[in-house]
Length: 162
Image 1 (cartoon, one colour):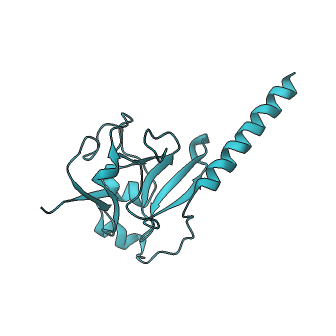
Image 2 (cartoon, one colour; image 1 turned 135 degrees about the vertical axis):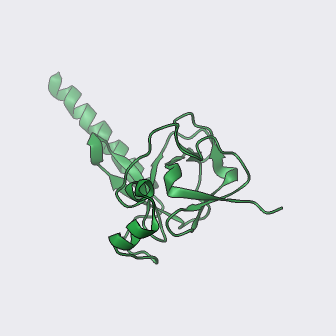
Image 3 (tube, helix red, strand yellow; image 1 turned 30 degrees about the vertical axis):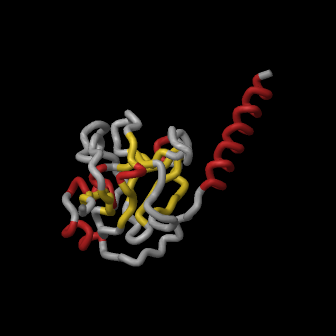
């Protein structure tokens, strides 16, 4: 019976991971339009921004500038200013980080399998510079079914011009 339970659990994890990998639209290939040395990134970014964007860190939940921010405009990569998300795709997921249900356009965000911290997740990165943004999950409440969970330190905001 133990072997059956272990086999069932392993099969479930394999199927879940396979399904998650098949939903990835843009895989990270490591080639970015904007490339800099680590010293150049450190000179450009604050220590906190560098930690998140270049060292794949995470800010503490409920502390980010854009967690409860719902103005109209565009959210850009803080490292290279590439547009990533619009305010139309932002929602309050109550998870402690800014959440979006879609990227601004196909190709603005790339995805990479992340097996760190004993978990299997999908990391999201800026397609232009490779900056770490956060992770995407298949538990979003909208029609896309996605929740892009993003660090505020990895994005900036441009208010929509009226």
